[in-house]
Image (cartoon, rainbow, N blue to C red; front, side, top):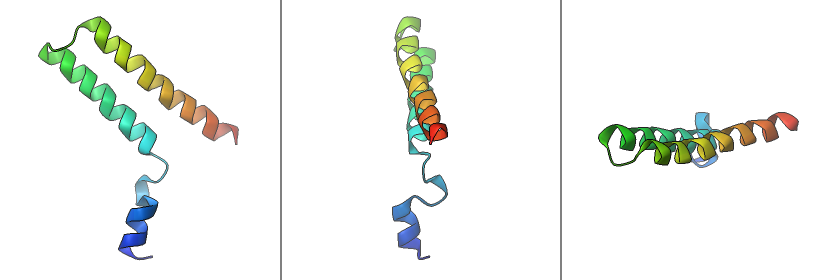
Length: 64
């Protein structure tokens, strides 16, 4: 398989984009809390929906 086809199909990260995006969002929210740009409630309000997306994605994937 050529490098371009591998890049287009996702390569080793195929099917993991949802988890990567959610992890990046959770780390960003945690970083904003540590820096002081967001309060604890704001951080929790970001982390729970992103974690729910991961669990929902995993549940849909396992149900097939």
